[in-house]
Image (cartoon, rainbow, N blue to C red; front, top):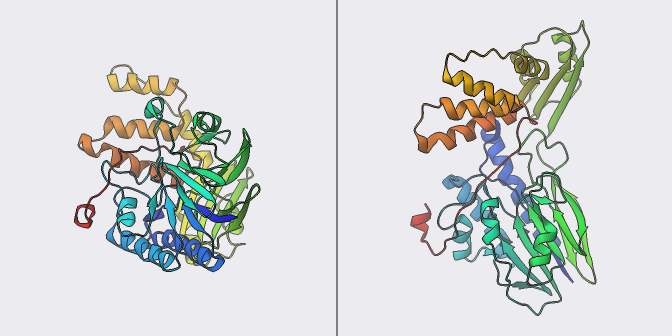
Length: 387
């Protein structure tokens, strides 16, 4: 039997809500996974991409991750991983740095055999490159096989690539697809193989209300997948539905029912009622010990979408009218405006848009779906080139 931890989407380096404590939380969650692996004496830790939150982690993120991987290596437990869309670079990947130090294995078309299971890997592949992708994997003599990759696969929500297509076209039979990218865990059987997401180890969005954790996958006579939770920073979700005569006092009353110490507090206001000042609610929560407080008044968002007045005297107005006709959400129109009206250099537009997307998601978790990009493979760079 081969028993491994299947994790991913650790997003180390994400300074969520612009507070350093959240940056530390993402590394701490990864450290907890590794120490669980050591305590349980698993055969390997399998990481399904997005080890880092972006392609430019800070030196402290790089060194902090290195220290965690050294703990794993000292316990003689291999770290097997692929590159996700968030962290991918145009040349060598950060995963290659850890591989060059003997702390990681970057999975590919060649089998990496641990126990009686062969592991293969695919880095994130954008839709535009999938038609040219080859499914030729080198053969193996192990009793079982698993393919680790990063992307949104059907039959799960938001999937844009059929898991059945990968299983059918693969030159080797695999018992399981171990996936990353979807932060919501889940498992299904497809064409006789298990297809499973491990979920993220920290909440990268306020829409991720479920507890965080990872999978334990056992390859024996059949494949067994169990779930283990992680003790992460408390998120307090307060959903307030206001009646016609209610206002800020009602919101304060609802928020005040919770222990907010060191928590991230997410308040959602809907219904009717009086106008509220989100800053007042955030201050109320912070005064009660919250680390972060964010308020979304969905009534204001709905009103903003109804306030559209267009004159065709200006070409920009014509474009805005056409965008409105497309039926995009308010958040999507905000991004369109960021791109068209940006005064930054073209090379920095993507970074500007990324910052704006993060702000929108923090304010309204359901405003946007995430997307990503990848980069070409590359290896054998020195530490100086990485840094």
